[in-house]
Image (cartoon, rainbow, N blue to C red; front, side, top):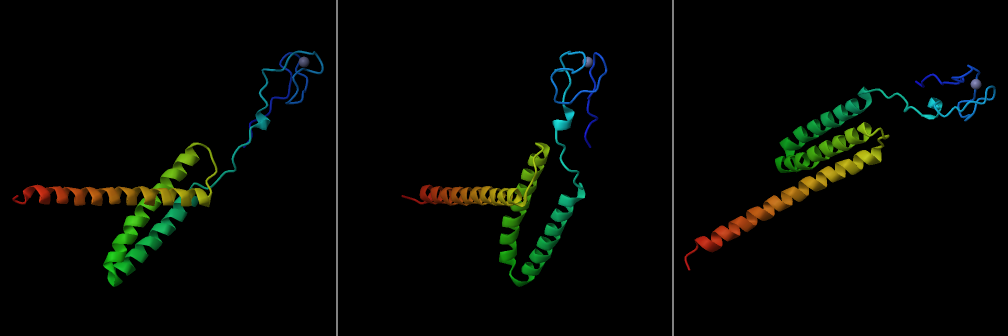
Length: 145
Ligand SMILES: [Zn+2]
């Protein structure tokens, strides 16, 4: 997938090395020639590879959640609360890194998953804390003194 390399002198048309700064024949400067061969192109990846992997994970999670919902509904809710933000966090991180042209490794996805879970659990913690604080305030001010 490399672009054709400009290897001829623009002045005399002689073949020159892509890295050469001067034409060996006429001596003209070759600074305008961009050594396109030095730009590595990322290996072509199937666009379905990640979405297929995500599909497998989602199907597994849905099956797990459905199974857990029958045995222990509380655990199923907990699994959804942890797994859904983890998946969203992992896919957001993956898409950001792919948009930036970086290779996405499994550790990157795991970091994204942990970040997504941590952010959600942190938000849940603060919601519960705010709820408890609100309840406390309502009770404290509504009781007759
Ligand atoms: Zn030349």
